[in-house]
Length: 358
Ligand SMILES: NC(=O)c1ccc[n+]([C@@H]2O[C@H](COP(=O)([O-])OP(=O)(O)OC[C@H]3O[C@@H](n4cnc5c(N)ncnc54)[C@H](O)[C@@H]3O)[C@@H](O)[C@H]2O)c1
Image 1 (tube, rainbow, N blue to C red):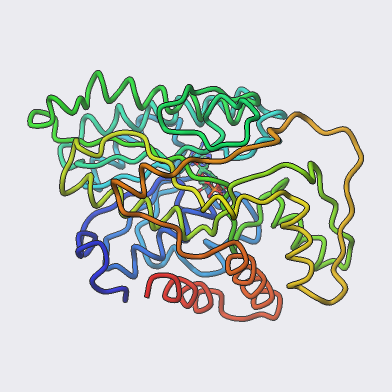
Image 2 (tube, rainbow, N blue to C red):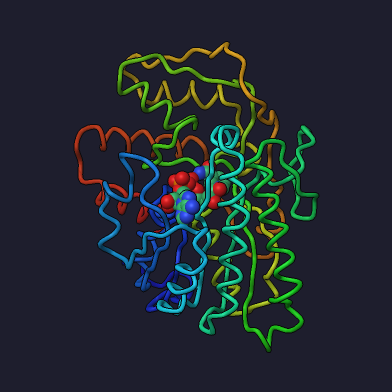
């Protein structure tokens, strides 16, 4: 158990995670289980095979509903049945390359899915907190070297990034129209959004993401191919934003409207590295002759520079990253080597959670 964290507000609390079968959702479900929470999930089946959800047997720790976020009636019925107090919304189509292949579905899931959830939550009296998880990519990217602040314009070049910018605008509209902080005593719901950086960690097998692509190639004994070697991203271990979401939901639960706004959760500036640096470092940590090469094929547009300014979350929420990029990469190598050697992945994942929090 993780005792005493977040002033124990998660103990015996009913928390619903949308997207619980995914990479971040599985880690979050396990953390909440260890905090003594009644964890509920609503999502489609795990998006990859293998998946952390299956490998660590997360489903047995929670009440899982397999459903589509676009299915408003099932979503509403599920919320009414669960009566959640806190909702953390992570169900999404989260991949840039997939959004170029399937733009319409990406918008349907990421934008209308968010609308469906907010509208359903309006009808369920138990709900006190809703956190919409978007991304660093929601900002209008100016390709500049400093970090984006929460008050900068939404944008997004590719459909994924843009759909998350739209999801932020939906959040803002619902907060003004239905969950207005001025009328908190009437509706009782604090709605916020969280914009995290490029999240990495064990248990991610998504396509077209650097670390999963790396692990796939290495385990087949192939050279790793990377695109956009000079692209800079705010890399962070999955436990970083998740610890931040929980800190934010605690404040939303205890202090309501004062925290009902947008928040960046990113690494320290020194940890925003380019793709080539990350790949080189992980090859060295992996050993066994791991090597990479640059994919020279033409690639769809991706931002070159992307950093988050996290001054606000540090000052107002007291949240700071705990693991630097070297620790993060070491942890990922350990996790994946344990997986490839057939270890119990629940135990390994729980150990990394305890190392992080305690
Ligand atoms: N991984 C990252 O680097 C990163 C960075 C910033 C933000 N995010 C955001 O965090 C959230 C989780 O990302 P992830 O990396 O865990 O993604 P993931 O693909 O591993 O998980 C996505 C989850 O959403 C569910 N889902 C997808 N379509 C659905 C639908 N139509 N109805 C119901 N559920 C559906 C999947 O079943 C899965 O549970 C997403 O909102 C993503 O945009 C991720």
